[in-house]
Image (cartoon, rainbow, N blue to C red; front, side):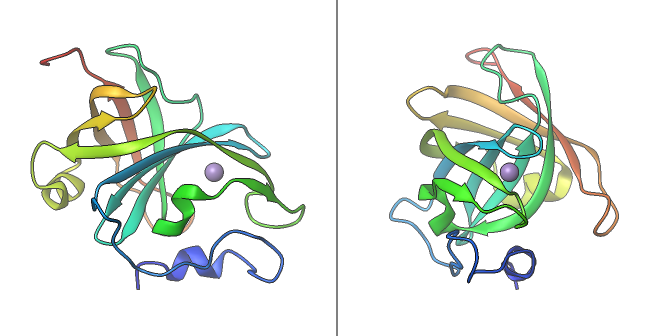
Length: 161
Ligand code: MN
């Protein structure tokens, strides 16, 4: 199940993060970027697909400068309800720290996103308040199992590129 890893990592009696379930939004194409001040400050970049949020941790934060490559480590799928989560994750819990929303809106893949996730190249347009235009995620390492997660680069493209 898509949310098993998400749930296994969290104690929902201790964190106010949503347990969530697989559910589609009205548009089916929500994106959110959360600012997560945890042991290491980072952005969490999330794209709705098939009732969950595909998720990447971006240590150096999402860049809006065309051509700048930002490491994006793919993490476990999150429930759609996570897109509106803000607040504090208690000490001792997974991801302890604070979460705020940097931006949200809708995204539109340029090709079949399932193919993109499989092939390792996902091109899309974001329509947010801060993030607008074309980005691409390019996988550079597949990752093997729990300790080694898939690594991608998140790159803003020039208009029309
Ligand atoms: Mn995070």
